[in-house]
Length: 243
Length: 243
DNA sequence: TCTTTTAATTTGGTCATACCAAAAGAAAGA
DNA sequence: TCTTTCTTTTGGTATGACCAAATTAAAAGA
Image 1 (cartoon, chains in turn orange, blue, brown, green):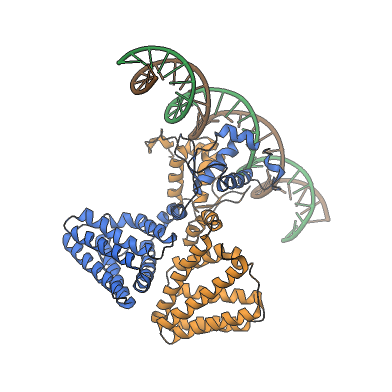
Image 2 (cartoon, each protein chain N blue to C red; image 1 turned 180 degrees about the vertical axis):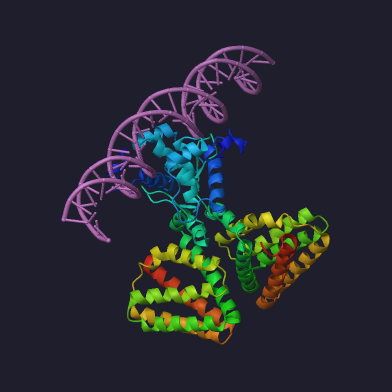
């Protein structure tokens, strides 16, 4: 028996009927009553199920989709999604895009990346397992093989860095890497791709790898820091220091 | 002259008129045409200004408020807000709250906090200025003075950690600290407050401070890591290891 | 004249209805 | 069985109406 929303939420006067619906729907999603990947029931059905108007249904659906529990393409039925850590990060995307326009925004973001990634290489140097090192090695080789092909180099570059985020086996971190790549892409992808720089970057990757291999956190950190600060200089050369 | 939205956006068939309005409104907010802190014009005015129905206006407003560009209390006019880094983090809040319910969610989040905070103390040990150290010292003293008052101890504890996030002068980091505190509050605030534990935690803070003071990143890191892992053990004792 | 009440007006929240165009599903044809 | 039409369903948008809370204007009182 589906009740009308008033029965279990005593907030009929808060001015936000949609909130109650949001709670009930998200509960049904988490409990699996609406299974992951399946389309949400049509709006007209939901409105009679909850005893509300379509206005409120749509508001609730929009809210849930912003929360990542629904994947709503225009003109399509919303798809039920149990959000992962990526969804959490991508929820920030729109806000972040505004912050990046402010002066110093990109720098602030990039500095946090340095902070995190430095921590990651130190961790890698201390705790990386045999498989982690093997993966880094092959990523490094792929990176080396792509020095002449800037597009491919960019890809292997990202892959190498991504591995650093994989080592702690914490699913938040790969999501964070993806977020960094996405947010900084507008800057990064517009930079001129020069094979000479590719070589520099490969050398940096090599030094980082060696630091990890030698289990030397300090040298790994120093190599990574130099690498990222070099990258930042390039960004400044391209966009000026006032971004 | 305000044009109807069709004139400058060629996406009248994407099925999302609200998106265009969102863009225009957010542009007006960023440009300061709608000044920060002022209420947005009434919906009925916006609908004629953009040549759209109230349906779409409301959808756009809701979207902007989820993005943090508007602060919308029910039944009140939305207030224009230029979002800061806090807004970005709090945009994740609803998603994160779901993730924290999943098994291991809290642990994953807490581990990233350890990662970040370790990086911060290392940085502090290397780069903290005279004023930073003075601030840490007085926060430490306040913490010591509050050992008997668990509520106050909790506050000064947070304040001490917050200072670590202030040292790099990167506005993202204080926002991150606030987010950690908010997200982990459900766990943390429910833990029993024992003066004995307060003493342990103060000792840990002292060790961290000494590490920073002695400019010894490694000992500072070790002290912080022990401190946070101790905290995690407490959480596990309270909630079981399966959270 | 200035505060306090009170009445009038504005404005956000919700509902009901209608229409269109895009999707999805069903039926007919190759 | 696989396309190709043709219905039906369903999301996007527009109108218009109503209510209750907020806001503002007006009136009353100090």
